Amino acid sequence: MIRIAAVGDVHLGEDARGRLRPALENLGDHADVLLLAGDLTRHGTVSEAQVVATEFENLPVPVVAVLGNHDYHSDQEKQITALLEDHGITVLEGANTVLRIGQSTVGIAGAKGFGGGFAGKSGSVFGEPEMKAFIQHTVEISDRLRAALQELDTDLKIALTHYSPVVDTLRGEPPEIFPFLGCYQLAEAIDATGVDLAIHGHAHFGTEQGVTAGGVRVRNVAQPVIGAAFAVYCLDC
Image (cartoon, rainbow, N blue to C red):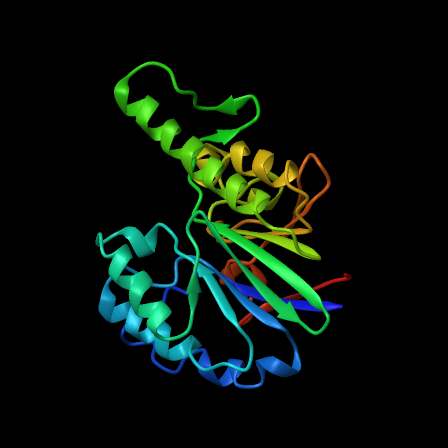
């Protein structure tokens, strides 16, 4: 059994030093890996990312992250990624990583994701250039996630995103903003590639549990939803 700890939307600022660290010190007693589902900072600054790095470095388990929309706000996402990786945190964007946990291999593919909406209520690559660019970005990110997942040949496979791949975990959010919280293309990538678990954040007022059309378990680990420093999910190899 592999234990997956996960949390997103911690939104750490410079006044939050040490806020999460006490709850993480004994993480190895509860989990084999920690996944961070984006929105690690408030405004996407390097100084905020330094707080994130300090909170999550040198933990007893590997830490794998994607960035969220807040982490892109100040156009410093490349510097944030480099800083986190310098502190031992693996940051994925259309990429994957493989961990060996006991006798098993766990593949994690990650991408921020983007909005666009869900079946029957979604945007399309049609009309004004601005709309076409919006949805094309969604398609490109989803395609990169699919490719990263397809590359994995592991005992377990996990998809890590910030935006949601399904409507289920958005229940509780205003329906009017669903298209800005996720997209169906992410779920299509997940269902096409043999994923065992999908983790996301972003939907602060959503629901923890959902499932894709193909039956893959989806978990919204936004901290306001799980109400803890992290949640743990167990997967059988």
